[in-house]
Image (tube, helix red, strand yellow):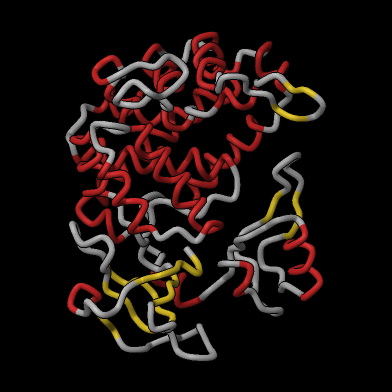
Length: 346
């Protein structure tokens, strides 16, 4: 939820960690006080996960079981907070890669079961750190990969490449306490680390190419079109989308504008075929998210429709209380005068 909407007494839905060192800041289940809210604002926090019984009921259908996501988070948190030299010197395969690989198999199985209703189940979650982002990108591309009927071995490479696409950021040189990325080289560092650990040529290539652009204006190698591996092209789409959705919470940019800009850049930034497939499986507003309409009413998204991403069916939130909300149900596709202008809680 936007921190501007947070009130004292609201209950934290997820543990909050310090991005710099991974230490626990606030524990799930704690009731927020004015002092906590003030301190979080001072730290630059813009969104907080708040427990909302009505939204939780809408979000109970998740693309993967919560314990699978929790296992990935545990593995990644252990990995991402290692010292750079440890990651460079250690054989990560025996510590993390095999465990994550097993979990990825479960992700593919569960996503396949939910593919027919993928736009109405919880896939991505708000980004609180690089770990959430990596998992979101993985889940988004697996859904699209299943939709375009990629073979199982290819799906495994796709999912692992998506999970590890930003691994190079963890081993970038540090200068005066700040990570330095001259010329945006983290994709190359990621590729080299993955190759060193024998993660596979395709997985390593995805890490190297996820910032390349279809028109050749990306980095680090300026590859164009079919020079970029198809799986890298798909991860580039999901990576950009997830980052932009996360940034929109801070900048106020509308999600509809993000999608319009991405589609306008088909075959410029992105592979148009893969972009269309991606938006066939990726909702603009997840079921259960709380939004603000242009008449200033709040509403919960309760149903999405393929090809009608900006106009889901919503249920108005009751004024002065968000629990047990049972307001009017509105299909925004049938009400052109109404539109979503803001996402309050994803």
